[in-house]
Amino acid sequence: MGEKVAADGIGLADRERYRRKLQECLEGLARLLGERRFDRPKNLVGLEIELNLAGADGLPRMMNSQVLERIASQDFQTELARCNLEVNITPHRLHGQVFEQLAEELRTALAYADRKAREVAARIVMIGILPTLDTTDLTAASLSENDRYFLLNDEMRSARGEDFALDIQGVERLIARSPSIAPEAACTSVQLHLQVTPGRFAAVWNAAQALAAVQVAVGANSPFFFGRELWRESRPPVFQQSTDTRPPELQAQGVRPRTWFGERWIDSAYDLFEENVRYFPPLLPLCGTQHPLRVLDAGGVPDLAELVLHNGTVYRWNRPVYAVADGIPHLRVENRVLPAGPTVADVLANTAFYYGLVRALAEEPRPVWTRLPFAAAAENFAAACRHGIDATLRWPRPGRGGVAEMPVTRLVQQELLPLAAAGLDAWGVEPADRDRYLGIIEERCVRRTNGASWQTAAYHHAREQGLDRGAALAAMTRRYGELMRSGEPVHTWPVAWPAVRRTVPPPRRAEANGWGSGERADGG
Image 1 (cartoon, helix red, strand yellow):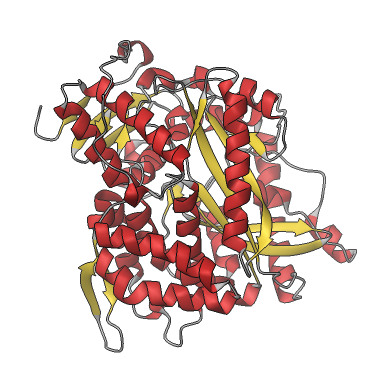
Image 2 (spheres, rainbow, N blue to C red):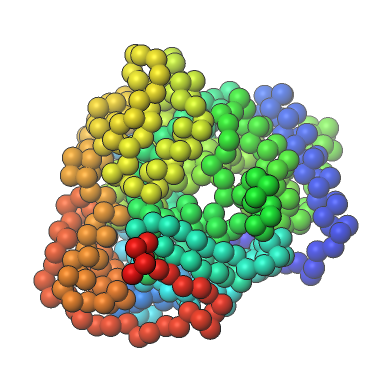
């Protein structure tokens, strides 16, 4: 999303040409798969984290261009809104003390970025949704200075034909409308990449889909949006609704949303790319100069630029990625389930849990996706988003037929942590690294505490101290930032803290921006 795109307008001929190029790209991908042209995996893992900027008052700071100018590193890039940044960590081989190495690099990068942000009175906050974001913070005027963001906003607005509508029923209810896609920027996540061979791609993707609910449940960190307490992981409904190009009539017809869990287990990476082309109209019909089939006929490797661009506008929680490095194509599974934060230790615990578990599940003699209906996996994902670490999920009975319901904490402790440990052993991860980070996941389950449960408990503690809603959210966000920078994992954080400041943020009117209202589920 960070590349510059210059477009002087898109006409019918551009769209027709782009559709033809997409079909050429699909044919080219099929040929590459058939000719076994793909790189062998090097056990490389990649890590991207989206970040927020907030001031000393806990409120968002819309100044990513000033912060990025001071950071002056290609490891940091813009994201959709001016209160966002993204940090990309150099790929590492999944072996030895890889998680401790990743943790050290991430701590160093975030500390440096935070120092630079402080030069303009901002701080880095690693969190799924910044709790103090208000409707006035996320409008078209808050989009980052990048041509592609403006073009994407224009095309999605045009496709929808009316304002984007948000209606999320959680602990409280949020009802709102937006004339732009800017609310999507509230959702800041961790993206985990794993390069795989075409032959193993389906197994890895299916495994990642099956465990997505578990990832969300134990890693939830986004319980607030626009001042309302919603789901324990509110990113998925916020992201889906703020990018939903379907007007109500198409929703009623069952047309698929662009933010999509999917609807079936797959047999090949081609299945996902083909579905993306078949089901979703192009949003950015920008054609490159390369002709994929001519390149293949000449013995070369095409970049499949149009397919890659289109693929980036379909927001699967586990996304297929095609890329070319050093003239050799490869495939990756990009896991986009996790929220950012709370701490580097928590991020790496989530990372270790995912990479260990996805390998173990992908290599099981009786894979979980042959025993769990896809509809159950989708229902699990929704339940995990709603209830977080208190969720109950459906999972195949070990050694027996059928599917049983069980609390996610028991599922993780009794079945999945041993599998994750075995998966990390298969990768060759150092036992001390394995035990340290999987131990954090275990402690979260023992204490039934993750980022979302801490945020809500701390918020209600602040309300009990006499603070109103806005002040309590700001106080909780400031305390979150302090504890985040301490580096101790979230399950150790105290909920109560001394001297809750009674600073009340200035009122910010939503009506001037075309937004609706929020209300409690009980009408309060």
